[in-house]
Image (cartoon, rainbow, N blue to C red; front, side, top):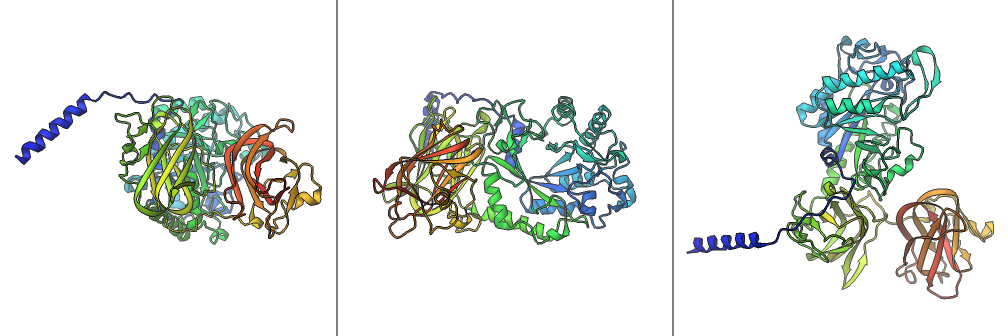
Length: 627
């Protein structure tokens, strides 16, 4: 009888399911990624290796004249490299097959300036091949960096060099198996040896290398490969070599605008919100100060906390992390580099080990229904997602925890096969029936493939995500929360004496008075009359944050309770409001106040107090910083 009941129950459920009206999936909002771009971003972290003649000649950018006879890594072991990368959680490696010095680490027949003419293995070596084989053996992906610029070749800057460069690329693309990425550096043209000419040469960076022909070759030989350059087309440079993307980071660029050597490269940290081409960011950084090995940097390897911080600001900012290992003169990854990289990976695994939201079905303010219900956000399946109805671009997502628990990390993901959508969101926690914002050190604007948040620890039984604005209806496929412990990779308190800021002046104040706002001394206070404070940065800057330390004297004079911040490029048009809000509890706890907003170009910033704690008082600023 029991079996019969189960059978009838199952049949009834199937019938009810069949009777449910099918719900149409959301339409994609352009631009959208190709499948290979999605697969690439899921790799998240992978290694870079800089190795060559520079390693043995203590250079970063070889001039093109180093003697190949100096290249002799007597203990070279590509398997040691790859085992390090695997232990550090890396999903692949990109190898500098040829850097700017023109020296080739494979036995090419196109030039004598290559590994064939070195003592390594009596000229029989092929490090590109050895590394490709090691990657295959240990199950990670392989890729190559081929510098377009060549400071050795006599014919650089001529049409003949372009043919040579294309032939080099074809060799690499046909002889070493599948590659996941092809890396073209943005450094192009300048001083070089150039066959002994020892001169400076310039090229048309947009057109000289005939990139359309290169893309055709790659589509033919390595169709799965992502092409990196400043502007893509597969992925883009992030605009710095420090390893981080902006907290606001769109995976778009305006097609055809960015090229190698792009002058406005800093905007690549954020992408183009109005872009029409999907080109996600890759964050490249070396584990040491230099890209190539220098023995004096053995004590300057990035620490576990520094690497952890970069992970949150790269992968956790909708980008990937490309971490460089300068292989040493023995041909090995240095033990300090190896240990720190492996411990960094273990640290991330530890911090994000216990997902507090696994299987918790949230309450949402809007739901499309069908296959797109709220439970999809916590089911562990990348390809299921919650969606709102068409036209609904704001919604709340509330999680009730089984009991009050500590929380200080959150992970959010959009279903990027349908495009990137979210423009602004906030995270709140329940504190005795009152919803309060978590304390972060960055703006909460975009999400994209993955957004990781670190915030000051709270203890709560409910947590809520409010999505305030988006480009189209919402498609969220994953939300997780964690308590990572109290860690050293992030701080939410800034000391006045350590605050960095763009230089500025304050309009209407004497020089002696305004200096009190940036003298890094909390004991001095700048007082301002009137209904607003105008800050002049002196030139147009990209700004993302306003920091304000109130008067720290016994009576805390001139406290601003509520505010409006506006910006402008021209003094007479400071009218673009970027943030409105309140400095909560400032009367009883007059600590540093930080306001984060979407990156914007401006010269002038206007702070208007819409409410003072004590009406009629002058505004008081112990310190002001603009970042």
